[in-house]
Image 1 (cartoon, rainbow, N blue to C red):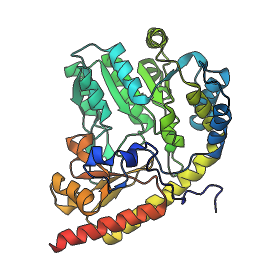
Image 2 (spheres, helix red, strand yellow; image 1 turned 180 degrees about the vertical axis):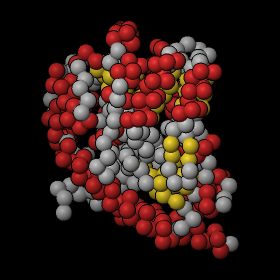
Image 3 (cartoon, one colour; image 1 turned 60 degrees about the horizontal axis):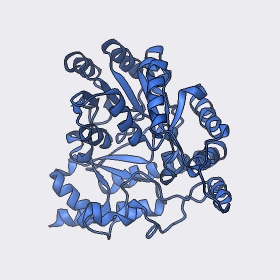
Image 4 (tube, helix red, strand yellow; image 1 turned 180 degrees about the horizontal axis):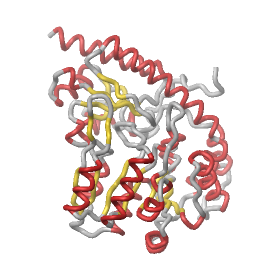
Length: 395
């Protein structure tokens, strides 16, 4: 029995949580079990709640600066958890990783410039790029039916022929859950350096590595990677505190960093709220035991998902993630159209998952399952899906 109770059922209705209170907006009905947006239903570490409560009890909520201890908590975490040494001047606050991507796009590229993404991939990469009048160039991942790999030959061809200004890297990759190897990351860095491409590395799932597998920060794998990269990360997914809106940006190369950080500063994009700094510092300095126990719980849940799916829905294939609490389900064996697949999950099983097509055409026939909930909830959801599938097959 662990120190923390991840089996606890917590009703989030009425708390403003998108996961449950925005179901009708995104799925057209509100009688669904929310297993979609990437936050967890677990209570956060008591240390975080205690730190926030102490500050909230003070009767004045005025302007607040970021103390040195806040920065030390982030750089200390990166050194301890990922063996990555980051200096204070190399890091700044940003108000969310997606906002950080948008800020980098707006600063480092111009309208009409090309930006490379690698679908199936987190859909804001495409939305933010196109919404800012840049052109998305796809370098799809290669899937062999069991696992994914990066198409490095295709990447070089795009760099050489399309002349993109930027690449958005997902490391670890969402939604397929793969941590890119050092060799692959080094080759991405070599190509980016050769062809003059700036790489924005989204590493928000970095702390959620599973089965003892290490995370490799892109900027740490080679001098070329450090030279071309802008790294974005956060405690939000790690500690289930996305609502605090606290993220960070590391830029090693002063030629990229100094003008970018100056622009962030003069526009006050780099100014955190005291809620963000206090929550982040408590998480990084006092939350590690909670995280380790949570990851062990997630590994056990993945094992149950694999067992139940194999036994009751063998035509669905579970792609085991190397990181995060998101499981990529290959449902193409059901021989349904993508619309039929969504109807199965939403209207028959009453489950709200992210449908794979939102991550790019390469995700058609897939679904993304958020297992960051008590196991009883995940078991119930899979039983509901199995029953719905049986009823469809009987029709």
